[in-house]
Length: 112
Image (cartoon, rainbow, N blue to C red; front, top):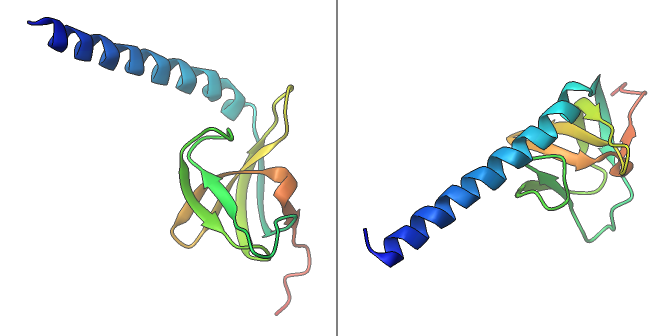
């Protein structure tokens, strides 16, 4: 194995360690979450903007989709972080992921 290959292998291993550590750090918080199972509307987002949906409950997590303001989403559950705000797992059509709960307002009147 030459030096270049060694560098690639070391970089890949470092990436795996960081990814595993991140997953383990998020996992206990997920277990401590609370079920919601309710509709919510996307609020607090500028009319011209969209709410980013993330793979994990963190602002630096990979974006998996976006939802327009005023759109109704299904909130499956939420988690609380001591040093930050709550994050909720939402679903809308084919978009599923985590959003900051400050951008959600529960919809109580679902009469059509």
